[in-house]
Amino acid sequence: MIDDDGWVELREPDLDTEEPTGPQPVVAVVGRPNVGKSTLVNRIIGRRQAVVEDVPGVTRDRIPYDAQWSGRAFTVVDTGGWEPDAKDRAAAIAAQAEAAVATADVVLFVVDATVGSTDVDEAAVKMLRRSAKPVILVANKADNTSVEVEATSLWSLGLGEPYPVSALHGRGSGDLLDVILAALPEAPKIMENRPRGPRRVALVGRPNVGKSSLLNRFSGEERAVVDAVAGTTVDPVDSLVSIGGETWHLVDTAGLRKRVGRASGTEYYASLRTASAIEAAEVAVVLLDASEPISEQDQRILSMVTEAGRALVIVFNKWDLVDADRRYYLDKEIERELRRIPWAIRLNLSAKTGRAVDKLAAALDRALASWETRVPTAQLNAWLTALVQATPHPVRGGRAPRILFATQAGVAPPRFVLFTTGPLDAGYQRFVERKLREEFGFEGTPIEISVRPRKNVGPGGRGKAHG
Image (cartoon, rainbow, N blue to C red; front, top):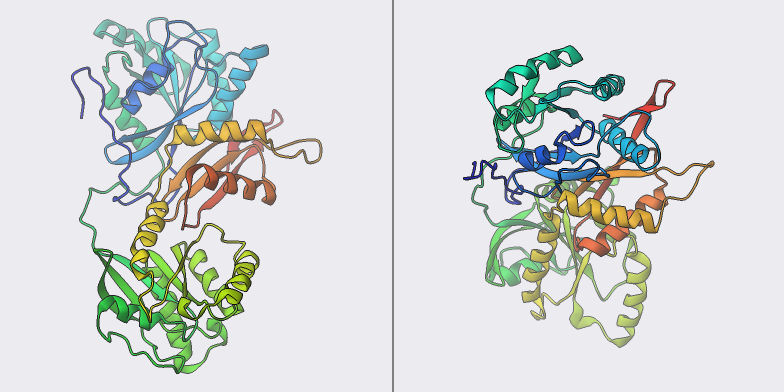
């Protein structure tokens, strides 16, 4: 939609919609100083967020913003004015612009249509050709038909057709956005909102930890067979149950004794069906027997859930059997055995007595909310910039890789991509994840962080990103 001022009305991607499966495409906006790059960015994102002033050099860093057009989400990166042979601060600004080009999927090269091509524009064209990125030539400040006609002279830059627009007034912006979408890499479209059914919850754990007892507690009937003999449940048992006033789709699964590769016969197929139930679920409730030590099999089941990327709630069942001594040792076990997943939500309950079972709904809601959390690109990068400045990457071999910027590639679970000048140490990547959780929460969900290092090409060391 376009409002009364000609501004395109855009929305943040809805968490109830289908998300792209990969990183959002990146569009870098570059050009010499004061050609209207930030005004164009504001026009694209549909809101006056980038700072605009009628003097050159207002924008200095690479600043990413979320944008959406015709059901496609992408990231727009505003840059400072690029100039050849720049010195001091201007050189740093130009370097930021070149880094934006290196990590972009598409580049918008903005030229002042009222001035025509300049020596600086022609030098910028050489830099863009070295990048080997798709370039869209934007003739900005084409506020009327006569300037549009003059913009045809920009064919001489050798970048193909110039697209005349008026970023200030919105003239030609819709056509330009269509051209941008056509140049972006293929990605799934954001679908319209649709009604969501009951959330799918997999009850998993080793044999005889009380999964079927918990299902029966919520369903109010003997929905699943319960027996003191371990391994009673073989096939997943589906039930719609009410927990905390909400309807949930619970799947009771077979107790896992061994790794799938070591199981045989009925146990082998039960293990496969349990793994499929985890994949089909949105959140997994892993039950542990609070009265017994945390076992190696408990650890393997937790690994299955986290590797599947599902939200996670750990339930310590049979709490009615836990005395003061056992609580002391259990705290030590949690600290030692679960230290790799400190983000998991933990709940102590008793399916047999009903103790604290109504608290499960709130725990599931928190885990799913984190699982579907999206951090706005601008907020993510403002936080990341402060983090890297406070704690830069350690120097290795006389150099330290830098994080150029980040974007959230998707949700369920949250996936982040870091664009860098080189590979990051595994320890530093874990540090970034830990600080990301401290800042934005993500309680009850795994998060995925991938690194896309810039690949150096040519003797000049110009770079472009992998993928």
